[in-house]
Length: 109
Image (cartoon, rainbow, N blue to C red):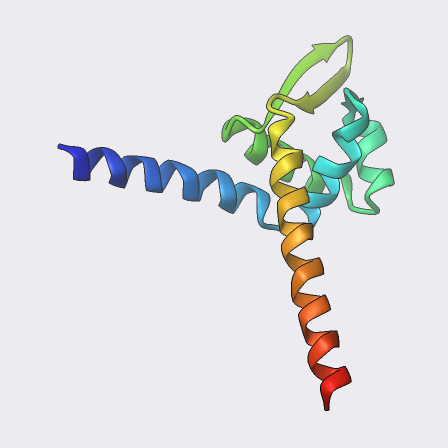
C-alpha cells in the first residue's frame, strides 16, 4: 500500500515538473510572476505565437499550475500556486553552484 502511494506521488510530481520543464512555459511562469494577465498580453511578451502560447497555457492550467477566468472576450491567467516560482529559484541556485564549481575547476587548470 505504501509503495503504491509513493508511486502515485512520484507520478504526480513528475507531471508537475514535466509541465514546468519547457522553455516557453518557463517564460510564461516568469511573466505571470507580476500577477494576472490576459493571453493578449502574454504571447507578445514572451515572443511566441498566440496559438502556441494558448496551447501551453491550457496545458499548465489542466495540470493545476495556472488558473484562468473569462473577462468579456479576454481570458485571464495567473499562477494558481506561486510556489512554482520557488521551484524555478531552486533550479537557478543549482545552476549557479554548478557554474561556480566549473569556474573553480577552470581556475585550477
